[in-house]
Length: 459
Image (tube, rainbow, N blue to C red; front, side, top):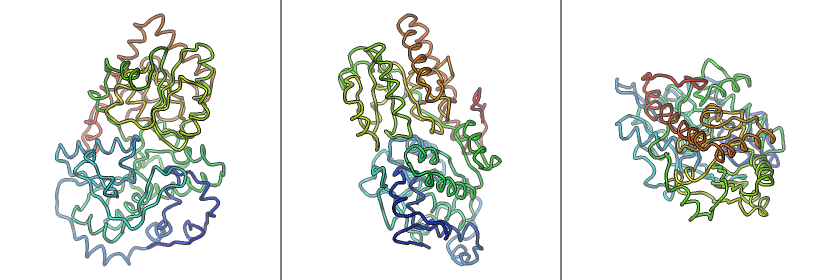
């Protein structure tokens, strides 16, 4: 079913992307769809009759007996330090502990397997692996279709969930068509906005969005993290009637306020005084980090005692380090081990998240759970996590003056009315503990109802 052409990739058999254009495509998740050599073959499942598959279907997949609901959850990324990967591993472990018939499905090399991965992981064989050209931290695999289908046949899934539109996600769509199984896509990442932020060629985001609409249009349901993104996707032509809220959870006992936070920052990173701003996440232009650097310089020129702790790895890390090399109070830590994160959040004073392309913002939720007041942009999903004026503040996107004034407001609160600042911290943790539980996420998967969240982010 593979249609490969050396110098170009065919989309629906007619449109071509040149080698030059593909080299300009971002190497993070947006370039997945352009790097998958069997994308062209999906037209047979999107537009043509599937009679040719019926012997395969009837031979491999007889009628299923009545049983408890089985869910297979497909993803291209499982070991990365990002929101979708963290969420999926947590869901996998909880499902295993509760005896649910939920299995994660991915394709990993032997050296990628670890004790962090839940036992209910189905590891698909693959025929080809490749690194993304812009972000070589990601290695994608093209699954061996026949062998993978043989492996999956014993599970007889009732529903297939798909977290990524890469090779594994495309194979999942193919498998769902063969199995005649309900298809649910999770819209974790806005690849259109990400690619717009990092690719100068405007054709690439346009083609990517066209391919994604085709891909998500074949789903029975599209689960979106926030109502904000339901509105955004509807405006961009996605079918609102298929959308539902995909709720996120967090372990509020693990991500909690720690007394050892300040000591950890001092011992590990030499931060001894001043006000510490914190960003955690992927170091990539789509996170609007150039804007954050500008805001930091302005704030530092006003006060002189502002630290900026940048936690994470990514394709833009080298450039950011070079740009801020004259700022001794800016610390780039690289990727940190997961158990260290609660201390990092607890040791900081303000969490800053200027991204306008995030559909949710798991790092914002982690920071709030640790009692860290957050300042986020008024575009994208994170603003639905933060209760403006109660657990943090929402500032106008890319408005340097407003971001400066908002950060000054929090700092003055720390200096002149610490009780008010402490209330921000307590309300942040309590709001997260009350409204973002893993129980709610699992209830959503099993169809169990629960009291909805208050405010904008109700289901």
